[in-house]
Length: 65
Image (cartoon, rainbow, N blue to C red; front, top):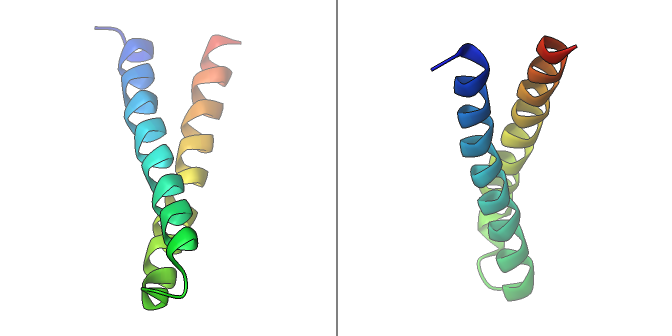
C-alpha cells in the first residue's frame, strides 16, 4: 500500500466520522429542548473532526500537485 492510498483510507474514515458528528448534531437539534445538556460535547466533537478532515485532505492534495 502506498502512502497516498493509506492517506485516502484515513480520509475516508475521518469523512465517515465527520458525517456521524454532523448527524449527531442534527438529531440533537431536532430533539431540543430534550438533552440540551449534551450540546457542548456533541458540538465539540464536530468542531474537532472537521478541521482534521480538512487538513488531511489538504495534505493529500498537496502531495498530488
